[in-house]
Image 1 (cartoon, rainbow, N blue to C red):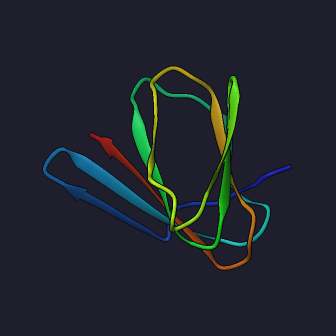
Image 2 (cartoon, rainbow, N blue to C red):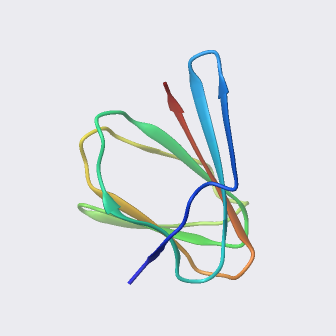
Image 3 (cartoon, helix red, strand yellow):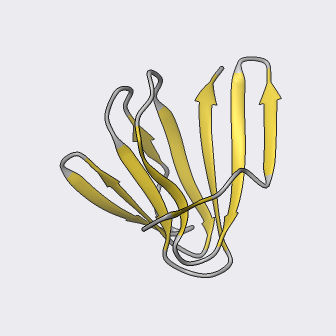
Length: 90
């Protein structure tokens, strides 16, 4: 079970929202969906993204992932001290 966390930092610039999450192993965003697409990047540690037909593993060395609108997904930290970012249009 993923422990839900809130962003450590949240910014809105023009029409872009950037949420920065600081997570330990097992923390993240449980299964959800929304009407907008967003980009997820991992800046430290590691995360796993689970979505309808795929599981993705991200670290700082992996290209950010675009998650499409209206598709369920969840994000879970694999390591303590993980930092990941969600970016989307407001």
